[in-house]
Every structure is written in C-alpha cells, then in structure tokens.
Length: 127
Image 1 (cartoon, rainbow, N blue to C red):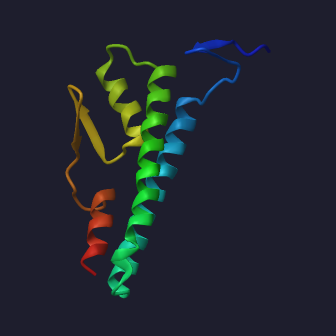
Image 2 (image 1 turned 135 degrees about the horizontal axis):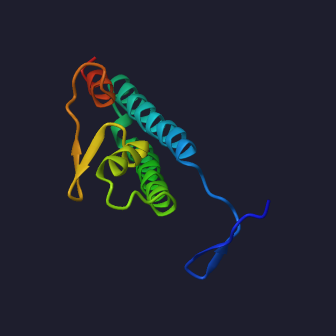
C-alpha cells in the first residue's frame, strides 16, 4: 500500500502521522509525565531547603512537555479536523488536555472534583 504524500510548508510528508487513538495515548502519557514532574518538584522542595534555587531546571522540562503537547495538538487537529463539529473538537482537545475544556477559543479548567487530575497534583502540595 502506498502512503499518500501530503504537503506541509515546503516539506512533502511521506509518513502517515498518528491516528486519533495514538494521539490520545500519547497525550495521556505526556500529561502524566507533567504531573509526575510536578509531584517530584514539590517533594524535593519540601525536603531540601535550597532546592527552590535549582527548581528552574525541572520547570524548564515541564515547560518543554507543555510545548510538545501544544505542537502535537496542532498536528492532531491538522490531520483529523473536526470541521464545525463542536463535540468532536472537544473530544480531540481532551486528547492532550484531559483536565480542561474549551469554549470559543478559550481554555477553561474543568471542576477539580474528587479524583480529577489537577486535584491529585494540588493535594500533594499540602502534604
């Protein structure tokens, strides 16, 4: 089976890209990496008095993960455009941002009820 060529800028793409399911799994892994790094940062910061001076390095890694999530989300929407289907757009968006939703171009955090991913990260700060 021949892989169709697509154009992206001045580059002809010969690779098929990721399926929606592959994007979803990748998004979940990247999100979990970010949460784990935040937990490690909090843990080290609460156990070493001078750790906060070195915290910038882990923050840079977390920022890199966020940039990668954003770039992958752009690829997901480019390859699997939902068109005007709002429900499909929400589903795709949650592939890389599972704890958030969007409305008219604005990112809105979901409620942080029991078991929510943001609550787990926040609750470890108080321990």
